[in-house]
Structure formats: structure tokens, C-alpha cells
Image 1 (tube, rainbow, N blue to C red):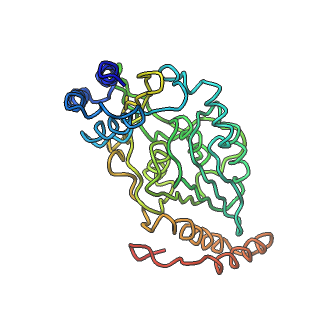
Image 2: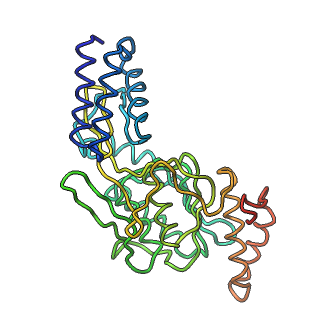
Image 3: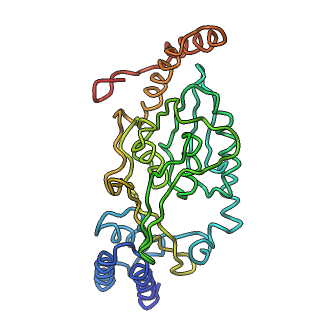
Length: 330
């Protein structure tokens, strides 16, 4: 890569930051860092993939924003913003990932389990989410696993949360730099299929790989008091971002907004969502499942519940390595 071409790529990254980054003062500092590194020759002797890695580290060195990334792709990148999301390749990616629903099942003891890896846009993932939640609606408790969830769209977080409440809830605000606009995020007035509802217990399983939209789910349900989080602190990315084309095989993701709790103004940027029950991420399932099974047993064993209660007793006996959490409870 010639020096002029590399400098043009750096200039394009800077242009996108100065135009869109949610903190203009930080964008100015980022520009200084990139220009200094370019002048030092830091980007001169690497290919595009190495260049993307170095620039990402430099971008995140200023304020630790993990949504700031220069990305190298094997295929030519789409134009800005929604172009990539609306592309046929993105739709195929979503379909091949089962629209972010890795697993949905009724566990022994009538406990629901939903494992999500990505919050694809509602227009893609909506039918899969509706089918999953309709299956889980009759269960007595729910484990919502976001330990592998790497992010996604705010609208899908709203959709999922709507299945877990009985009335509309204002759970988040999103402030956008462009137009100094604040959008209130509410659960929806209607969802297809059946709701799990707002009274049965929910545990959200979290870990250090939970990011962005997955953190939105965990944070919002926790702050509402609708769910308890179990596991480890999440990765810490609360800034909605957009992608912008830099060159044929490069794009930059830029935080264009901030997520804020509507009452406290707090979010999870840089610190992650702290678990209500801190255990190692690989113990989160067993820990939460044991809690759910104990809840099921508290519902009694009369009539039709006799079989469910027996299932719960047997399952509880089989849950392994569920010792006390770091706060001394399970």
C-alpha cells in the first residue's frame, strides 16, 4: 500500500469520525492520534488487515469505546449504513444463523431456555422470535442466555422485552449527535404469538462476551427489576454505531449515539452490566437453572403439576457444581 493511498484511508476515517462520532471533542483527539501515528510510519509496512488492527487499537486507546473499529473484509464492503443491512448477503447471514436464535427449548421442570447470539433487525428476526417466545410462553420460568450475544439492533431488544412484560415500559433513551435528538425506547403495544408475561421469573445469563445489543437486553431487564442477571460482567459497549465505507475492503464503525437509562442517565459503557448474582460465566446456566427449578417446586405438585414437580426434583438432583455464588447465595 503506497503512502498516499494509506494517508487517504486515514483521512477518510478521520472525516467519518469528525462528522458522526457522538462526542465531537473525542473525535478531535482521535484525529490527532491517527495523524500522529500516520506521521510516525506506524501504518506503512502492513497490509490492509494489519492496518485495520492497528487503527482499531489506536481508536480505542483514547476512551476505550469498543464500538470504534476499522474493519477489513474479504469481500468488497457495501456503501454506508443500511446498505449492508439490506443486502442479500446480510439476509443470508441472518438466515444461516437462525436469525440469532441459537437454541430454544423447554427444559425439564417446565423451565424455558432461549440462547441468543445476535439481535438481527425485527424485519428479519421477528418471525423466529415470535415462534420461540410462543413455545416458551407456558413455561414457569425463563433463562435468557446472552453470554454469546455480540449485539444487534435496538428494535429487536424492544421486541424481545415486550414478550416479558404486561404493559408498555419506557426502558431506555438513545441520544443521537445528529440533530441532538433523543429517542425514547418503549416496549411495544403488540407482538405476534403468545407472551411469557410480566410476572414469572426471568434470569439473564451474562458473560465477558456479551456486547452491545445483548447488554441492552441484560441492562434494561435488570434495571426494570424484571430479571436477575447471573454470570460475569459484560463487555461494556453502550453506544449505538453505524458503519461507513473507507475503501473497497475497509469500513469504519462509529458510535453515533449514547444509550441512557431514562431516570438515572446511567449506562453500561466501559463498565459492563454487573451481575446480580456473580458466578463464573460457565456456571451461570447451572446456577440459574437451579434457582428456576426451586421456583417451580414452590408452585406445588397438585393435579396437573404433579408431573412437572417430579421433573423439577429430578433435574435439580442432576444439576452439577452449583455451589454458592460470590455473594454467598445461589
